[in-house]
Image 1 (cartoon, rainbow, N blue to C red):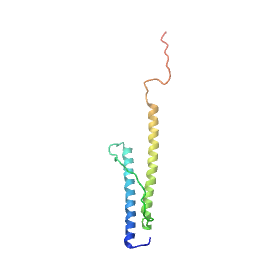
Image 2: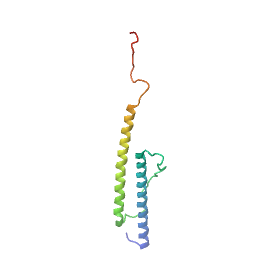
Image 3: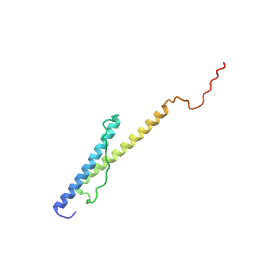
Image 4: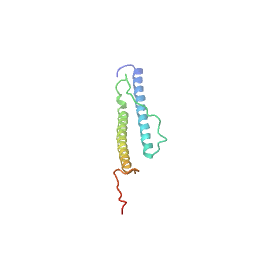
Length: 115
């Protein structure tokens, strides 16, 4: 990026703040997943918030590529972990549904009382 040193500092500061926000979002999502796995639903954060890509910023500075790559890798691992947790939850739900005892039989039952 060409420009004044002050403009370049602002550009870098925006990227530092953006990557910091992304890291905090990943940490919050990891904390939620860990709490769910522990069965600790009371300590879940009330809001994870939604993310919108920053607008009007220049390309990522080369000096921050490694940090951005690490954030991306954590996000991808978290996506896989959440997908596995969702699959496991659905499987447990289905097993529980199948084992549930209903008071009414699912098919008619006839008893011969004339013996």
